[in-house]
Image (tube, rainbow, N blue to C red; front, side, top):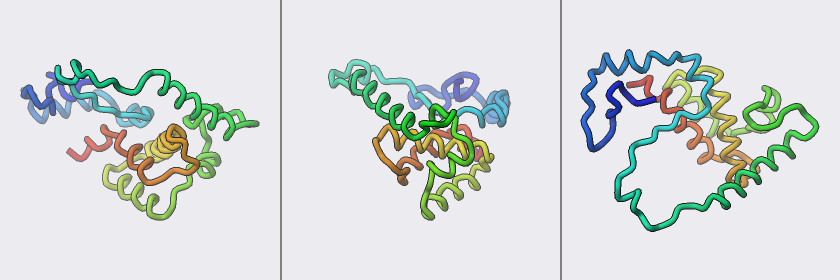
Length: 162
């Protein structure tokens, strides 16, 4: 979805012509319970022509595919013998067992949850996404930067403060 009806809010090179009430009405079209069910809320700003013309290659698809397959293998091993196939399908007991955060990370997550008034569903989804980010990085445990990255993917939750 666009950030506003005209699509230029936060664009950088073009000015948004929508008023605050228009933006609020536009964003209200997606209900909170629906947004809670989306694991990732990612802003995708327009690319600059210079970025499109860049000659420096990005990460190749084969490397990305290998990292994803390794993460999937970690998840298969973690949930072997259960009906769970991947992190997004964890039940509450598995979430408590496999998404352990230390006191400092727990306090960070609690502050974020209180600041943007996250629902319990959003809180759990952040933990599941952090577990997946850790798997993609090859980490056994969730670390602070995995948790911070997962929190940042809740952009619509952050927008509730605006």
